[in-house]
Length: 187
Image (spheres, rainbow, N blue to C red):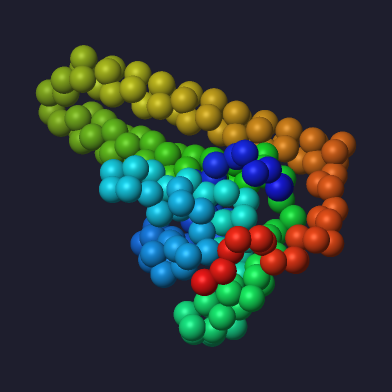
């Protein structure tokens, strides 16, 4: 997973650690001294995180799970301690991120399909149904179902491909020096 050139987004952190957007934002402010400048950008700019930032957030997640205070976490970060990230490839992180976004999209599309089906039943039940409206709704429902099926097939294919690639190319073992303090970071 280690790739210093890949910028990770707030969405990646939300998916990787199961945090809400506001939690990421709060941690960026609270632990800014140990994060890259792009993690706390100027107003109206998007946050971008480095692999080193992810290791800081991993420590925050571990210590918060242990019910440690911000003061405890800052002390640990100040000594160069960093957290351990899950053994995931960049592609697997992207699949997790995309699958959660996809699930939200699928839920919205399914909700729209349900609304259209309800409207369709109402129109059909009227004494003088508007035949053209019924046909248009049926077409829209069919098209949305096809889009949903196609998106689902693409997601399943991408997920399967990610696992095939993982079987062929296992993630490299982390070097021992990962646990050493990063030069220039302190607080």
